[in-house]
Amino acid sequence: MTKKQRTLEVIERLKKEYPDAGCTLDYDQAWKLLVSVRLAAQCTDARVNVVVEELYQVFPDVNALAEASVEEIEKIVRPCGLGKSKARDINACMKKIRDEHGGKVPDSFDKLLALPGVGRKSANLIMGDVFGRPAIVTDTHCIRLVNRMGLVDGIKEPAKVEKELWKLVPPKEGSDFCHRLVEHGRAVCTARTRPGCDRCCLQDICKKTGV
Image (cartoon, rainbow, N blue to C red):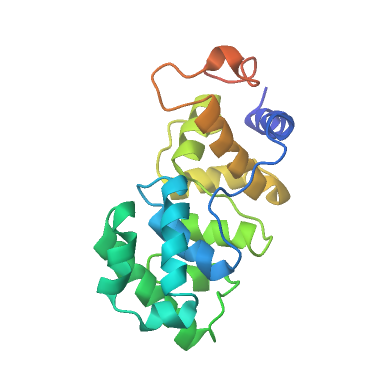
């Protein structure tokens, strides 16, 4: 089985296993997803979803966050960890969106990357989930799983994993595929030494356990 064949089969099986997989960060506007994904670094999505409720009560829009002090934002987002740097990035990001993009999150990958605190993972998430563009989000689950499955070979750097997956994953499947990898990584293919291979829908084709 080639890597391409294995990838396409993995995509189809995960579709059946997790038909409704999607982003687990709560948001109803693009700027809110930008805020949440920054807060999610080294923090659970569940905690972020709780923290942003209070954040948006105090600062309900881009302008409010842009005009807030870093200290005011940090006071609320501290439970997510790395409060000062996250607050600083959120404030600077909202200022740039307000001042350079008319208050709207840009729909260009390069312009997203130019926003403070936005890396390739965040930019891909926005492009895929908000704008419906081809995207591959290489988070820790994605990197762990695609290495175990044999879709990439011992590559840990997110940008390099993303580059390899673009060769294998059909563009229209990328965003949903990555969401399903997160679901599978949490439920079955965990980061533990002994993941749940015995109950995995990919057991017979995964390089770790199958062909």
